[in-house]
Amino acid sequence: MPDYIYWIATALLAGFVGLLWRRQRWLQRRQRLLGLLDLCDGLESLLDRSQLRMQELQAVVGRVPADIGAVAASALETGLPVREAKRDVLQHRLWIQQEGETASLAALERARLALERSQGRLAGQLRALESAGAELAKATAASEELARREPPALRRPPASP
Image (cartoon, rainbow, N blue to C red; front, side, top):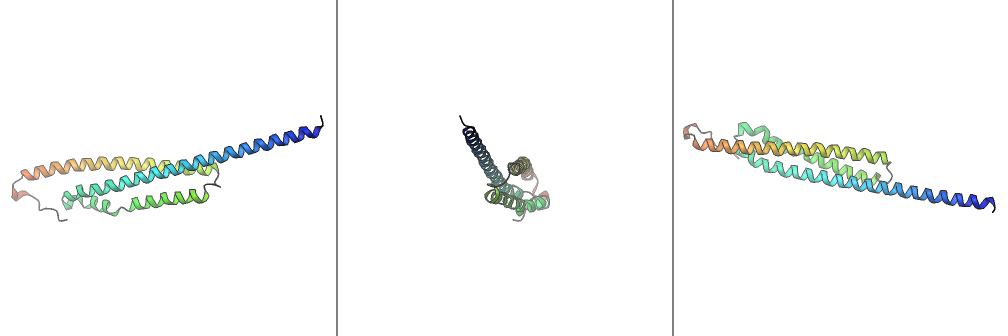
């Protein structure tokens, strides 16, 4: 059998292996991109829940006397951190759309880690917000109950809306 047949077979085999390797890399990249989009969706969902929870807490803070709840009320009213975080998620989505197909696997991994860190921090902050909200609601209800028992002369004036 001539030598050129072995060379042709070797070249064909190398080409086939190269195609399989490129296909595998493409599948890995696609899987990571889908994972990044899922992380963006999860982060956006957490932000929506945080925003909703902050709106719910505004009603509770509104029942607290103004001198006590002023700082909490102003923090809840701005909503700026949530809007900024949503803008950051949108920037991640745009990066994925524009650069995801050509980004290295290492860059995709860094983006995944950054999104996971953000999601972890936000989830912890949301838990703290819910806990603080529950404590505030409990304290407010107890305070209102005590205020109902006080003689009218000792009561604080009602909070103005």
